[in-house]
Structures are given as structure tokens and as C-alpha cells.
Image 1 (tube, rainbow, N blue to C red):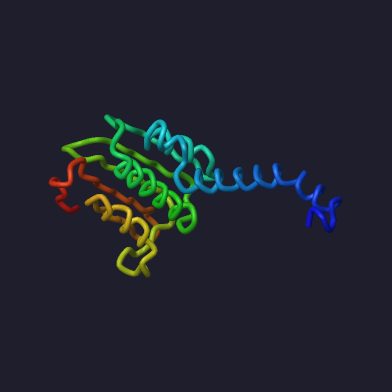
Image 2 (cartoon, rainbow, N blue to C red):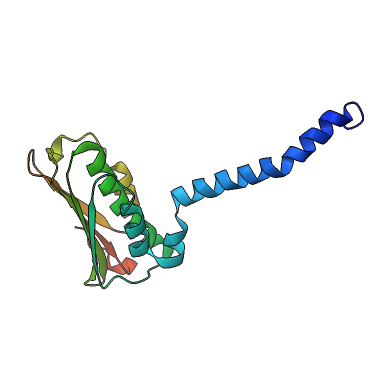
Length: 168
């Protein structure tokens, strides 16, 4: 092309640095959306504080005794909480969401509650599959308490050592 259409080739070459930077920026944004940098750098609590500031529904986050964990545990904690918040935001029409994370009894636990419309948990069609997969990947588990008109509470437990996996 350079020999056949040098003007066109030169024009295309001048656009390549910007195109490459656009591709890098897009990939960076995608990777942060999948696994945010603050999760890697500062841990699950900091990452959850960051992401809960962005939603249209207020989220109150409390944390007790939370420290840095293995990347797998931090990812399960972060994405488990995020999945519960997103489900509440999408389906429950809440005015408020509460999130509590804490370390207790060689586990890290989270509770996400909302004041939304609630639902009948045994009538669901598997919308919690991502949360189930995330928790099972680290030997953890979760429970859901809800009833129509009474909000929903999701409680997850992640063992800090694989040998402690006890179930919910």
C-alpha cells in the first residue's frame, strides 16, 4: 500500500498511535469493570466502598475486622456483595440497601439487606446462579431470606481456610 498509495498509507499510519491508545483504553476499562484495580491494590472493603458510591440507590456499608485476604477470597467477597446489591437494585425497587462485611470464626461474612418488595425465594428461577458459583469456588455458601413486601437479606460465609468449609 505504501508504494501504491503513499498519501493514503501515510494518513493511515498517522492514525495508528491514537487507534492503539483507544484499544488500550478500552481494554483497561473492560478489565477494571471485571476486576477493579482498587480490589487488587486495596482489598474488598475499599473496592466495595468505591462501587457503592456510584449507584442510584443509597448503600450503607459497615465493616468489622476485615483485612486483606487471598485474591480468590477477596474476589468472592467483592463479587458476591456486588451481585446481591445489583439483584436488589434491579428487582426489588428498594429505597435503601445495607451491606455488612466482617471476619468472624475463621470466616469472612457478608450480609446485604434491602427494604424492597421482597419475593418468594423458593419460586425463583435461578437468578442467583452467579452468586452460587462465586461462593462455591472458595468453599463458601449463602442463604437468602425474603418474603413479599418485607425486603430481602442475602448472607454469605466464606471460610478463610479450605478445611473449614462448613456449609451455611
